[in-house]
Length: 141
Ligand code: FES
Image 1 (cartoon, protein in one colour):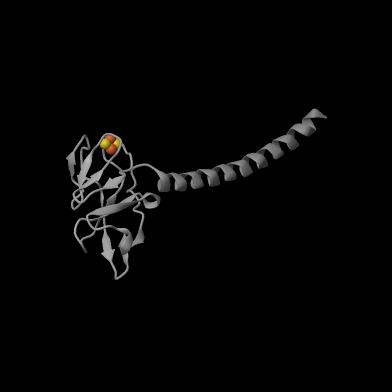
Image 2 (spheres, protein in one colour):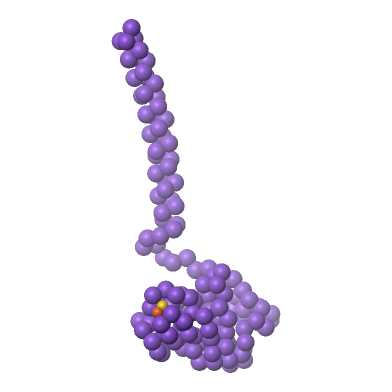
């Protein structure tokens, strides 16, 4: 009796393994896809967005937390945009003056036109974003 059960159990196990293997393969493919999009050595995805021109003060700027972007306008009609992630330890910059983008964590300061560090421990420039200014919007990507 037990010998008759064994072959059928093996059959079930074999089918389950095949189905399980198929599922495992699908999961592995899905996991590989998710990993490629989320982390690793893949290039940083650059968030895009826009803000009304009126929201970017002359002699200052605005930090858009949702897209990790800081937009500056050192002089009227002169716009720049950078990643808002500080190159020191990854805090978000929080304030913009006419000349400096300031990180609150360890007081790094960046030039509002170039994103280059000018004070504090930041080792390199903020990553620049592309800016397009329309009549009413500052678009960045
Ligand atoms: Fe910005 Fe340290 S994280 S200065």
